[in-house]
Image (cartoon, rainbow, N blue to C red; front, side, top):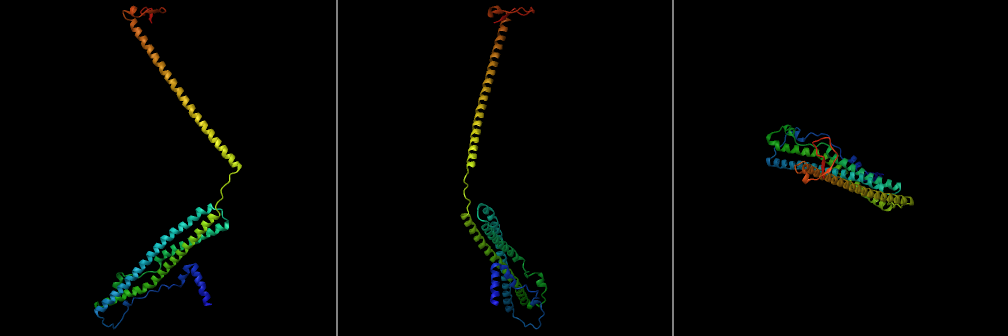
Length: 308
């Protein structure tokens, strides 16, 4: 019976890794540091032994802090990768599923595969963010020194014990952070595998159920021929309109040139008339300019002849 339950638990962990967090170590309750406890009858510890104890305690405390930083940096990388991958997984089938003519069951399987991949990737991003929020780490602050009431000779020993106590109380929290990081990693791995399988399924479906080429019918051919004829007629009409416009422009230019010639001839004739008038009014009008008879004018100051 126990083996059967273990197999069920393993299967559940294989399908859904966050189920394993139920078996993680709980966060311990607050424990008073041993350095703050009242101890009587401490033996006198040599100075070099206290210094060695303090160096070892500082190394342990620094290693715990570096471990915390490493875990949170890896979680940040998983969060960025998971969010970008999930966006791609959700967008890819939207563009490709509409271009294949597969049965509805095949389309449903492909969409479900991409959905499962997106679920795993989003779960990876969620648990990656939980790495920073789980538990509270114990760090050195001003209260750590103010709470120490010991003799100067025992300070290094008590301070070393304080650092060791902080590291001891941080260990379960670091384990929880590491468990959440492990869950994020496993979810990301399963999401990547599901996305690859869904992509391969989509490629196979695209090859097998590729859209068949459209064969034009007689009506389509007739419609295309009519459209081509209309395009040709419109082109001929446009050419004729351009030719008509050019002829009209040429005619307008000829009329303008003719009007300009008439203006020049009229101006020349008026100029010659003015010259003859000046000649006829001179004293030698009868020699330089013969006159032609004109009707009699009532004005006796005007001559009775017109200059030719």
